[in-house]
Image (cartoon, rainbow, N blue to C red; front, side, top):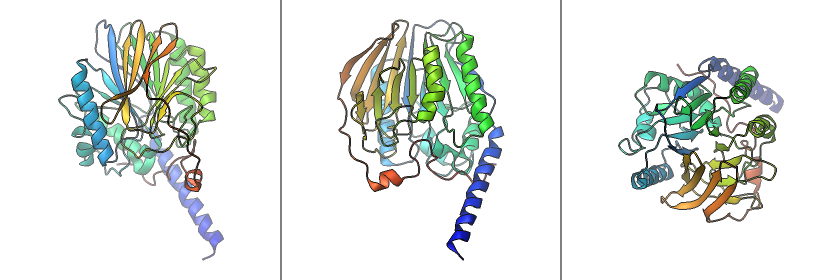
Length: 355
């Protein structure tokens, strides 16, 4: 069989896989609004983490560090924002025992007894996992796993919120075009409508800016970035690069927080000219939000604070403590030719939708 024919067959299979993936996206397309605990509150505590569900040693280490950190903090936590690439393994469905081993039992139920609000990453679109994750949330309302739709809003609390969080789907290349545009219009309408919290956080998988291996994504800067600047979004939280970063980019008011240290293998930094913080370490992030300020702490795999900053209502950002930036390392041939750089999907789309 000629190489040309083999190539054509490969293109046809990839196109069919993409079509099957996008046909399944009618599931979970209606955006939802979640209200957290009711009544007036003076403080909200949220964790953030991405790139975690592989069942490896580092996922277990980070889960243990999160347990230890929360237990010793003596604070009440309102939830955790999961920034995509929730499962690197193949899921057979909502009854797959890996739900128990990689999620329900991995994160201590007695200590981490709060909602896990999940967004989708590129690996979650493999083998129909996006539909499985949505369906698991629907069938198991008692679970900490929360994913009511592909994008949704959370208010803390319901009335006169202190914090509004938008959980978004940044998988532009994997979403159907009309869904991508529908999400963007929904976000625009939500930001314009008012009734938002004093603090606004947007969370998704892919970064607008990153010192890490994937780097900046111009398409997201032009679409979401413009909305963030127009409507004063305070924080954008993401993963995709397997590390921890805090970037204050000149000309941008939003604080960019990368929390991709949940357990997948870390990669070197490719840029060390921006900061104030970017380290190739595992860990997670803690947001402490009050009416006057937000303190953001980056916690490593040993439950130590490796960076902390404060953002005031005047948008002034002050570094409270830091371990700085890892030196940039030059790219290798492998890193340049990897298929998941920038906005390209990391793997081929799913060939079948979940049952």
